[in-house]
Length: 287
Image (cartoon, rainbow, N blue to C red; front, top):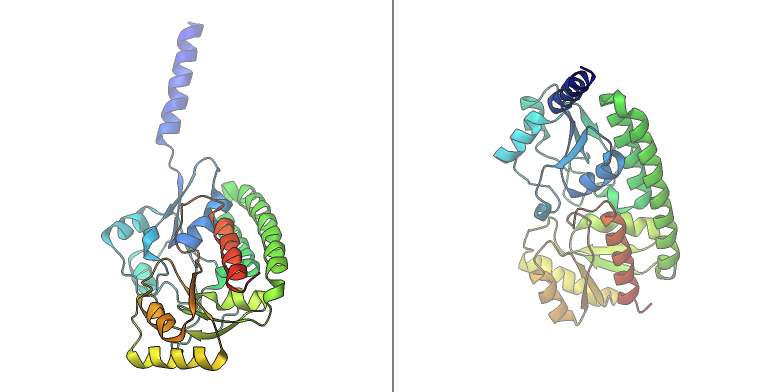
């Protein structure tokens, strides 16, 4: 009899576990996925899924796919970068009016974009602003899922501690480059440059994936020559065609900086990518 009761108890427990639903967190693209994974990863009953494929890069003109709509239907909370990065949010609001949306950039003052009427929303590339985003994510998830509130806050505190160490490391390594002028592929690196004293003197393309006009290329060549800039920074997610033309015309060298919009998906990938960016910058300027 005791054995039968024990078996029935185990079966009831397993049945309850099988029927329980996880708290499903959906993120819009890679940097939000990594930050959220560090806040919510490893918590029983919580699952983090990324919406846009990792190869997308920055969202900008991203169009929602059928898969995305299915994920949105299943989600219990949506984490966005904000600042206009997710230009499809009107469609999300229309389809999922009751879905809690966590704006990771809430309270962050953004620079205007070089594209008129928009903001430069690439704030995650400044580790200090990424820490603000982590706090916003943890606070938003704690409100949407009170059962795991303390775990979200604890995980966020741990991750922020790691990023504080990363920020100190980057500041020390890039201190000798203060005041150096750089030309980048698009405006992703303005916040990183501002944090560590670099100067973005020019941008090759307004939008990733956009091919600059002949006039744009000529103007960039003139800028490179006038400022004596010997390095161009391209991004691994996008075609280097325009940068190669400019490098060929001016004799400038090309280096790759990664805006952290794709990667191997590991919780440490933001830190790994930023450390590689530091290595590239130091190499480009002979450090």
